[in-house]
Amino acid sequence: MVRSTYDNRNGYLNTQMIRENTKKQAYRRSVAGKPDAGGKPDLRGLTLPEISRIVEEMNEPAYRAGQITSWVYKKAVGSFEEMTNLSRSFRAELSDRTCLNPLTSVQRSKSRHGPTTKYLFELGDGQKVESVLIGGSRRNTLCISTQVGCAIGCRFCASGLEGLVRNMTTAEIVDQVVQVRKLAGDTRPINNIVVMGMGEPLANYRQVLRAVRIINADWGLGIGARKITLSTSGLVPKIYQLAEEKIQFELSVSLHAADDRTRTSIVPVNRRYPLKQLMKACRHYTGSTDRIITYEYVLLKGVNDRFQDAENLVKLLKKDKCKLNLIPYNPVHGLPYERPDEHRQAAFVEALQKGGLQLTMRRERGRDIDAACGQLRLAESRKALEG
Ligand code: SF4
Image 1: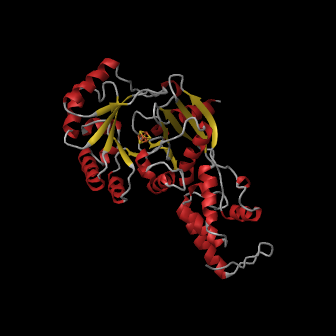
Image 2: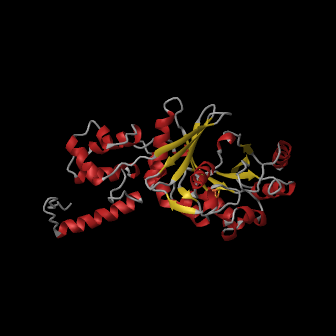
Image 3: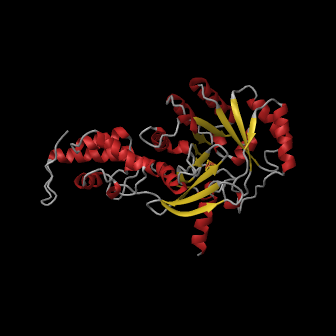
């Protein structure tokens, strides 16, 4: 390691230091996505080995790295000053090299019908994202976002309405869990994570994978790999890439239709990766990881809830080791789709069960708080435009 002879007061910078700074900047860019305005990586997007390297560069004992991850991930501090078991000078140097920019909670809405709470967070550049905490009898599931907006443009989805604004950084993805844990308190411990909020997670592959590894790590948020579900609208090359990672996270694929014509009309990415390619990639994933995929199917009245759709679904999935999750649609203001009535939903379920498919129907929680993905953010930005 090159020791620096940089003198802040005289502005002297030797060539070794220039080399070191260039390397540091590249490292900061590579590990944390978008750094703060000063180019420093956010601690909340760093892994224990990366923090250990910083600690080593500072000539501090190795155990300091564990103290830092504990403050950042377990105790959820929002500033360096709160890390009271670190000396003042160490904290000062750490804040010269890194930053800590927690998300700001700007809105919290609780459902009248059940233990569902939706959080709207503001990011450092003023963009807003949503996270939804869904309570159950045995578990609390947090649904987190991975992009501001979304480029996939599923026709029934609020997040796709305004297109993609930008990818979220590792720190921003992880911090949703840290902040909701803090806001929800001990009464609602988060024991399940679904990466199904705003955005296509596999389109922000590197940052999302880093984030879920931090959420999973013992030194991070300590949530078991099998309690973390990644999702995709069907980015075939990324499914193959994910299979190579040899990780234990769950994978969920948004299917929404079992024939190409219908699927392309509601999930446009199907034009690029039609069902044949998608199913081949999914079967490869199951074969090489031994993990069962969950297929998500949003029920849209008159679009994909007909008897023929159920028959197609049975034909497509009956030989696969998989789970199927039906989700009655949550209407989005301004979009033409509707939820099928209870009778139609029951008939669809019956046809699938007769065909031998195992399925679950996602219970409705939080319809009154715009719980479908992207709706709260959209309502907020519309309010801002109108106000
Ligand atoms: S459903 Fe998911 S992938 Fe499709 S537009 Fe919405 S956020 Fe993007």
